[in-house]
Amino acid sequence: MVVLVLAPFVRDDWIEVQHYPDTDSDAFTVIPIGSLCSALADPSVRYEGDDWGVGVGCTFTFAGLTIRRGGWSHPWGSRLNVD
View 1 (spheres, one colour):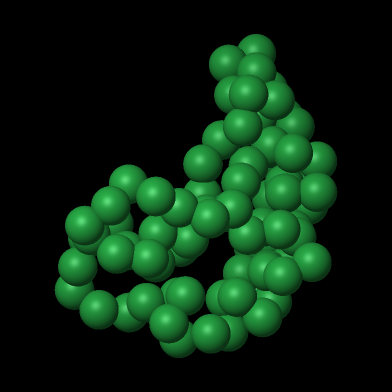
View 2: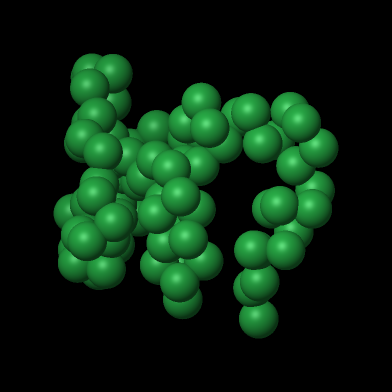
């Protein structure tokens, strides 16, 4: 379900899905759209522990921020369908 929601935004380069492996570093890996399903199914990537900032996060790209700042409600709202 999460991949279905994220995929259109990643495909259009509005967001990046990033994996943060640990709390000791600011390093992250961008998860490409073709790997979203397998990455989000992997417990070591998804991380369900108590440490803040570890696991998967989404970040706006410059294109996504431009749409958001320019009246994002229509473009985002028309694409974001969570049932």
